[in-house]
Image (cartoon, rainbow, N blue to C red; front, top):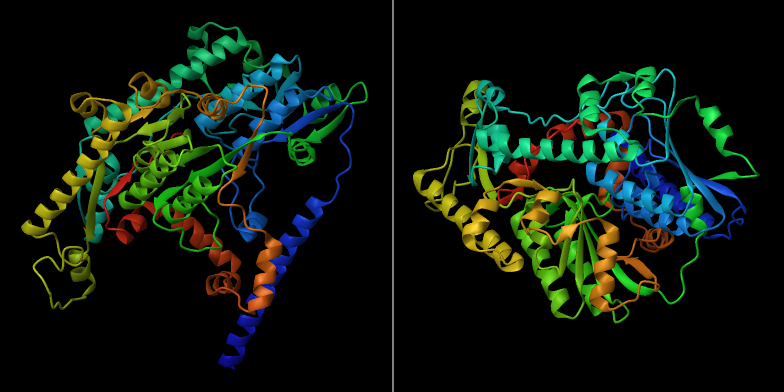
Length: 588
């Protein structure tokens, strides 16, 4: 009976795999069919309630299971094309409860401004900015539109920012777990989550700079876009959340209305709504475009992505190194656009990507980096060899530093009655064992390693950014900076997103402004049809896919939530290599 059950699970896994791949293949085939023409008069619509992604998953199965959130690049390119399209009369964007990042909002704001410059109408609608939670960034995006409409029963939760970071030392003390970590230096606060009961002064100083920087950017932009005094905007933030009628009175919104009223107001003169997805799908490639390789570095920096059929949300060194090598060898590629959205991670992995970026430049391919919401620590390290580096004003970057260590569970084992025997084969053989603390000799070697990595990181940053060691010491030590602050301190070349990166690429390869750029992803997205045919040819479903398909979906969903909560702990436990990453941080 047990054998029958195992066979049944295998059969179900195979059938499930083929079904998912077949569905993905059918979806791709359908998308490739000739779509009906776009209407002569239209209003583009974009619903951001699924969020905004940096990159689409590489795996076709992951793409099939994703929530369909548009990417930042997709929205920007579509709006820029639509700005010059006489058929497009306006843009209607909706955002209710979903959250987007600060830098993402800034890139969309800039794209909306360019769209508006063509004389097209823009309207932003929300049933409620927050509904019991902070929605400052959502309204920040909305304020870039000509009109902001709010549901009469909605609220405006522009309550500002508060940086929060968890501290687990008290819990670990109760469990009998000791966190033994070293860092370079005082601002490298990722380890504080496990070693302290509260924020250090250095950490508080760093986060204060972030919160004040973001607040200043939002106050200035909202005041400018809404024609208000900055002092009033600050007062509105301090009094928020505001009810809909209060928001209208303060001139933060233009009208209170329901969704059907919004639609009626825009569907005039024979206009039709067309989603941004549909509009993008029908756009044809521009002729004589200059080919630019697009390489996405999104997620935690690791040597590999693990599950090859995963969601691709890992900054995989192996994958990115190959992408840079392939782009460097492609004679049609004139430049490389490297988009980074990463808090950092493994130092050796970041160093491997650093090397690949430098080699691509040496091969004659200019490399321009565009930073997303976060490009810190290992994410910043990987960007250093690029010809140009751009960050949005609200990007979190810097964090030039390193930490490493381990968790010691010796007291926990005593509490639960577990003892361990050991047979060491060397003086430091037990250095990374969780059953014993670092010996004095092992702790000394750990500090040698940290000093070596920090010297390498700061040395490469000094060379790339033309900053003296004394000046770098004041900028590094693990401290984070906003993109605006980083630009003032020459850690990046300028403030801007994709558009600034495109302009830099044009300058570097001498492409006139009227000649379009064609962005081609490297590595190329996997085709579900080809993946399906490979399974049919080999008759084998990957083990990891079979296991995932045979798992109970509710248990898997619960495990996924727990895994996300424990991610900082499990990542540090699994990888004893020096880490160049930011601390866990929540900014409502």
